[in-house]
Image 1 (cartoon, one colour):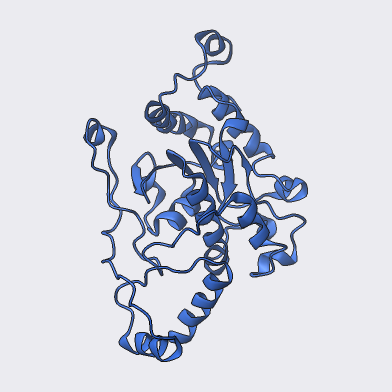
Image 2: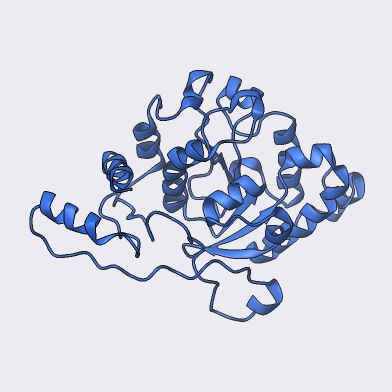
Amino acid sequence: MSEKLEAWLRYFADLQLEPFYLERGMSAAWGSRRREQAQPQPAPCQPGRPAAASPVSAESSAGQAARAPIAVAGSLFDRLHVAEGDTLETIRSDLGECTRCKLHRARTHIVFGEGNPRAELVFVGEGPGEEEDRQGLPFVGRAGQLLNQIIQAMGLKRQAVYICNVVKCRPPGNRTPERDEIETCLPFLERQLAVIRPRVIVCLGSVAAQALLRLHRPMNELRGQWFDYNGMRLLVTYHPAYLLRNPAAKRYVWGDLQKVMTELGLSGVSSASRSSRGSRPNG
């Protein structure tokens, strides 16, 4: 156990993500070993682990300043320190031509993310597909075209939001990213979100939701629910690729995103546009 933790500590140090807070419950042996190796210094504060994330309904949150507990249950660290002056450019430079996990072996391009670095709304997907891998851009295939329609229906342009994925390289055959691949790439996504610090994060699908929230709940328990993620509002809905296979689910996604629109004060597309395209995104 201590060897694995030591490897993680070295990895995060390489990313210049120290100092950080160690999670409660770490063995005394590990703490003793670190003290023997390190120069004497004041011990870091060890806040208690936040309570497990719980959804906050729109009704119960309206008019209340309090938010749900930060949804980081099960993480290695309670909260990563955000380096002063960190930027998306710095994060991309730190990522480099990444070979940290096996996904790099078959990729064409790293798909880092795209959009407004000061966006109030960030969409987080699972991982790049074939077309994304070819172009090096997120959500540019069929699912991306549907996401563009959804964004337009919300009254926004794609350039106004930020779009990224949990993993930056395409999993072979578009399979679900494996746990070690997610754990390797997740620190970069967390840094992206910390730098952008949007008002709302929309997780597209269970992989993104479970990775950020550290919750292993089924999609039917996550979808449409508000969570608090490090002071940012996070909502879970279906991935556009799922909608391509299950068009009837579009009405659920539109209902979820209307909550986002209310949170951001968006009115959506104009009535003229709705009359010509319908009240929900097509595709």
